[in-house]
Amino acid sequence: MLRVTLRQLSVFEAVVRQSSFSRAAAALHLTQPAVSMQIKQMEETIGLALFEQLGKKIFLTEAGRELYHYSRLIAQQLEEAESVFDRLKGVDYGNLKLSVASTANYFAPELLAAFCARYPKITVSLDVTNREALLQQLAHNETDMVIMGQPPEGHDLVAESFMRNPLVVIANPGHPLAGQKKIDLPRLAQEVFLVREPGSGTRSAMERFFEEHAVALRTGMVMNTNEAIKQAVQAGMGLAVVSAHTVALELETGRLVLLDVEAFPIMRFWYVVHRQNKRLSPAATAFKTFLLNEAATLAKPLPTEAGAPSGQAARRRRK
Ligand code: PGA
View 1 (cartoon, rainbow, N blue to C red):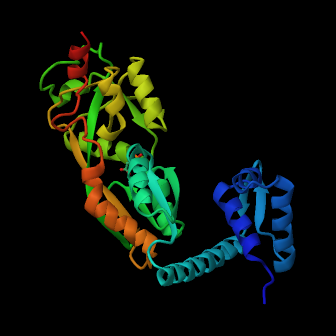
View 2: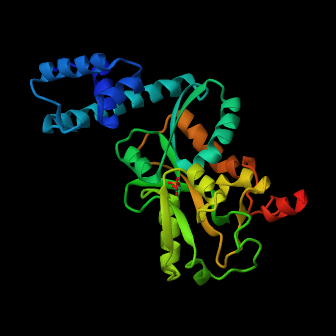
View 3: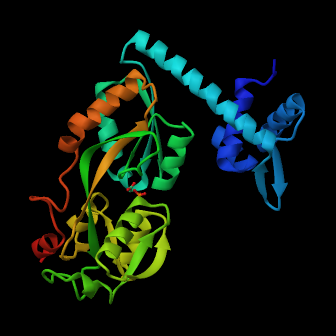
């Protein structure tokens, strides 16, 4: 029998995920020599190299790719066994591995706080990344479930929507379009838009929308966080389309305003998504039920909904 240990497999997986020995070491709280040693021992046991170095980058060899495949299957089996034991212990126990889109991180912690207060013995690990990376995690079975915009068809996924995700146009309060009523879409073609990185769900929804309305946008800088986008818009570098979830604070303090643009907001939805054949643990099932039944009522009202500050109103109040 192949004498590799589960510990070695998890070190190996970390190196694959991080594409780097040093980043894997940092993620596992180990030293880099300790990580290299584990990989070297595995290579000796197997009798084949697992990685090859080209320039500064490391790549999996064919043997490495095969090992990754089996390593995932083993991890999956163990997780299934764990969830069977959790089921025997009852819903109170267990682990939830949740991954959310960067934009969903503006409401996910609040929901998790309410969930954990109800199930204090469930431990949750939360990963925040963009839409493309979430689809990868689902494909490699590295997560119990994810919160993201509508996933693409045909990936053997179960996706259920639980809350609205309106996309809005934001501007610096001093922008000439601020306060104007019913700005028509072609007028936006004269403005520069700051955009999220390729792979962002917000970005692809925005691109689809303008394409459908035959408006050619001028795009400026590309930024990989909503925070960077908001700062740049505040600094007057351009306009942006973001989820209303991300701007509640800035609208309340009047640092940003929403523009009243025809056909906006773009109405999207948040989905809870998992693999079709995934055996959900009791903790994961409890979280899914919680999201579907309660998330929409627990989350704060959005700036696009009645009773919430729109930015213009906040500015008027301050005058
Ligand atoms: P993102 O999230 O723009 O942060 O990727 C939104 C989504 O999944 O649609």
